[in-house]
Image (cartoon, rainbow, N blue to C red; front, side):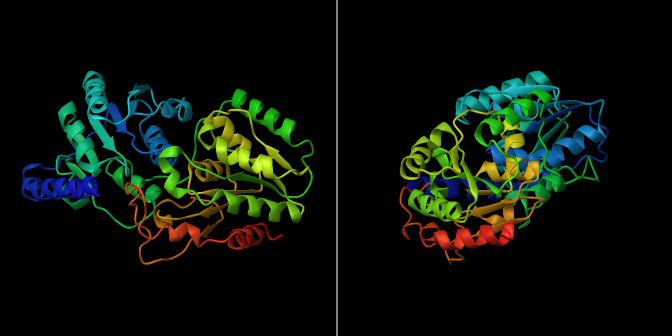
Amino acid sequence: MTNIVLRNFVRTIIGVTGFFMNALVSRPEKIVEPHRIAILLWGGIGNYILFSPALYAIREKFPGANIAIGSFLGIAEEMFSKTPDVFLKVKDKPSLKGVFKLLFLLKEYKPDTVISTAMSPTFLTALIAFLSGAKVRIGMDRNNRGFLNNVKTEQRNEHEVLTNCRIIEPLVKECQTTLQIDISKKDKKLAQQVLKNLVRDKIGPPLIAIQPGSGRRQSFKRWDIKNFKELTEKLLSKGLRSVIVGTEEEREEIDYIARHIKHKNLKILRERLTLPQLTHFVGNFDLIIANDTSLVHLGAAAGTPSVVIYGPTNPEKNEPWGIESRIVRKKLQCSPCYNYHIPMCQYNFRCLQEITPEEVFDAAMDLLSF
């Protein structure tokens, strides 16, 4: 709780400073065609995917420009292997040390334009862009904290894809809002082989991918594993085929379902797929059921519908984009809150606890028209 109070206090001080400093940071009279564009990607896998429409729009608009992605996750190069020209990779977490490393790489790159994405920490990325020496610094201006950006985007209550497209609007007027990642022929071939090994017959009842967990740092999004078990049993009882997917961080949840359910139509994905491979893999499914995790966004990029279980996060900002979906959540007065830094929610995560397997099952049946 102390950390949250301190963080909000610092944000307030920065915002007040920005209120007075905004007038001193003038917008460029004319934004000329950029030659070296650096994009500061922040957040998780899902946030990277939700920036993809803006990324591909920039690449299409400026085919001759050199584009660099600066990030703290190696997944950027995995997801967008063909689109940028340079990856400014920092293996450290977004710590003070990591931020200095990113700034050093950015100064070496010598961008003329720096773009901070919708999920970027407003003041920090504006400061990095300013210190990089870039003449054009584009990003959000949440409560005046982005005052060091000289091309600012106001905050709105809208989907993250739309915010990212508004951020790049000074450079690119037309932003196609289709989610994409770079998938090679080799990735597609491997994904198809893995699917064939799991599901022998392509023709049959609907095929459902179920992700019962989330990353460890996002455990606050997890619906109870016993609920996932009951949901899976209901799906199987209807004759539907189900495949449990997840990462090593969800091994406990995956093994729980594998131990408690023995059924010919239940398979467990044990192979570790790259993100492009996983995207192509889930593109062969009829439905994804998951918590608010990156899998639903990978599925959206592949055109697969989803049923998503939301707790303390806000579906208006990051619901599956561009595909049919069903959102299962409880509209409580305290939700969305994003207060996941508190070890124990004072309401015992009612937003997740009150969602029943029947509600998720009914949403799946409705979406499948089954």
